[in-house]
Image (cartoon, rainbow over all chains, first blue to last red; front, side, top):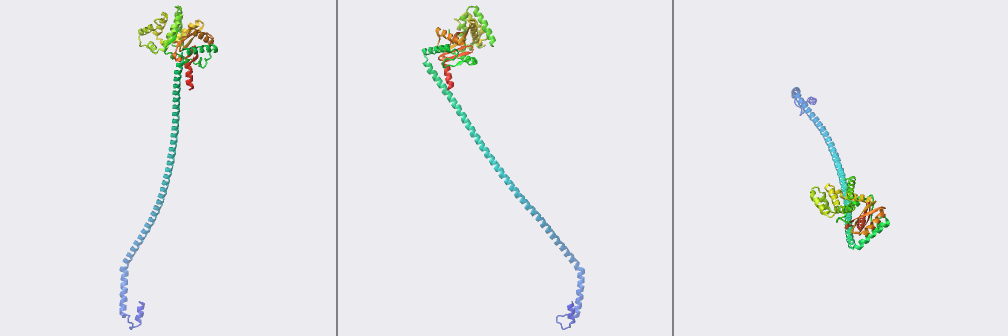
Length: 209
Length: 174
């Protein structure tokens, strides 16, 4: 405006300078328009701008809050993930240790059972061997005695029997109650075996008059 | 029957036999019958079984003791019919011991596989008498299981010189 006034003051020879009245009316119209705009349009525009500004600020705040919450959630998530990983590692380690312990226990138990089984088998085999040996020994003894009885019975003729009796009489008469040569003597204190043998050893029931 | 009762029975029967004046024969017959009873399960079962009628038992005894003296038959019949058959051998042994004791002697039960003649019996009695320090009366039981030699039992003392015992000892050693 000041420039326009200066240009107007320079005279009518300026080609870009409007006429003076036009400047005056134009200025008045401009002023009227400014006043009208400031009274009528500016408040609504300002209100809209304020609302827009508030909306943007609210949106920004919401975004910040959301971002903060997201950050918190992320941190929690990361912490939970870390915890989960640690828990998983701990569980895996415990499972591994449990498996190792179980494997060791099972191995030790299996080895103990195997050793016990071997020991028991060895004992059973030994006992069975002893039993068979004892049984075999008894059978051999029985067979040997039966054979000896047959041999002795066959060789004991009347003369030999009488000779044995004479030997007995002579030995008893010489040695008293001591046993005849090679024979057993049972004295007081063992009458039970003697009585039972005497009672059952007479199949013919014979008694010499 | 306990020992006291057996002794009582033996004493009573001994008095009967002695009063009848047939002690020697009764002793020998009772001894032979007792040994027969010990060695014959069927005879013992018949005489012991309470289900067997008394008449049958008497018939069996009559068959066995037909040639024995009436005193012997009466004694055996008394013991059997009163239900003491199981103790007959013990009663007889005690009676023989009592009878021998009246003669200041003891009884030796001798088991032999073959019979002994009188000379052997006398020398055996003498030898056993020297062994135990008393006069010995020998009662011989024929027992083939002895195989050879003799087994003499005087009271609780047994002098064993049998082949059977030597084989048994050999078996124990094996």
